[in-house]
Length: 382
Ligand SMILES: CC(C)(COP(=O)(O)OP(=O)(O)OC[C@H]1O[C@@H](n2cnc3c(N)ncnc32)[C@H](O)[C@@H]1OP(=O)(O)O)[C@@H](O)C(=O)NCCC(=O)NCCS
Image (cartoon, rainbow, N blue to C red; front, side):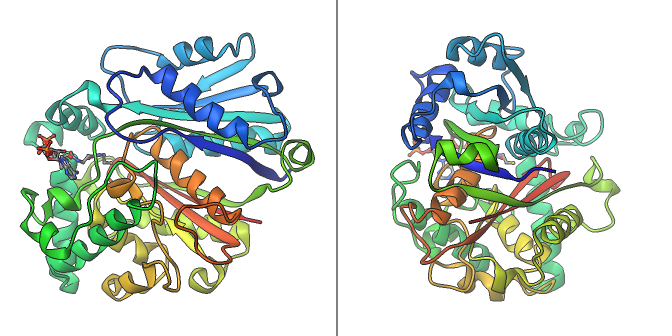
């Protein structure tokens, strides 16, 4: 199978972009990406793979995007996999290039969450639970993720302060990210004193509601040389799944699907010891509790020892995590978020990040669909 190269990345600011339509956001991100190439134009791209989570009004919003970009009559389709849509779209884009079906692929992810008040946004997100079982008993994502964190706290003794340290790290990292949504320096006390949402989650433990778009351009290794002098390569990919309903899981304190996905990706990339072989990571911190649980599932530390890894995840630590600010700081327009996570790793490995990790040569991206129902892990290298 052929090697896959990331040759360009672009994104919009993540924020409430109320006056911008989805197609305008995608074109803004696309222009950002094309600018960094050796003159690549849209005509050079043979396939468009798209990802968004939900639009309660419009079906097949991807058709508006392909039309607006002028991509006709070339191949285009949407990949939908909950919050992991962008990551699954990347998986599909890589498969196209590996198999030889496509030579150059544009992956575009977006979301317009400001269309809804956060109450409605939460209801739409919760439709990613089983609407005939979980939904009817009041299970929304904040409640589910809160419950999973409580189980972890019961077994391993973390305190709310521990999770708050992750929120502080990520939101303060975002201050250096000009495209990030969060603009205010915070402390652990700010997190602890913020409004309770679903114990132990307070507002500042939760990811933001955002609008935005992010794109990646991928090609074969051979084609990459014509597009950029500085490609990044996809070294490993893994997706794994778990039960739809949380109540059907034997283990709710951690994410078994993350363990399976990461081991697949590590095997493919030849990674034996992630902490010494990976230089930086973007972890799907839809809630800061997930980041701590994922340190364990990704094998950065042993189960129950996530707290001890928090300082290693600071910039300057052994494996910095969420340099971009993550979903809590950079923002979380759902269909765009995993694409933006990969973009951050792309910029890190090219030495172009606004929050650069010195000498970063290999990076990891982690992303969730559902409540850890589909988990993606990707490894990228120079
Ligand atoms: C945490 C959450 C429920 C708060 O929503 P809410 O209580 O309805 O808050 P509102 O939208 O009414 O906003 C009230 C204030 O809180 C702020 N706020 C809302 N969510 C915030 C967050 N996550 N972090 C920081 N501030 C937040 C708003 O900016 C607003 O500030 P202002 O009064 O200064 O303008 C919402 O942000 C949320 O659901 N986040 C998680 C999203 C999610 O689940 N994504 C998918 C995960 S896979």
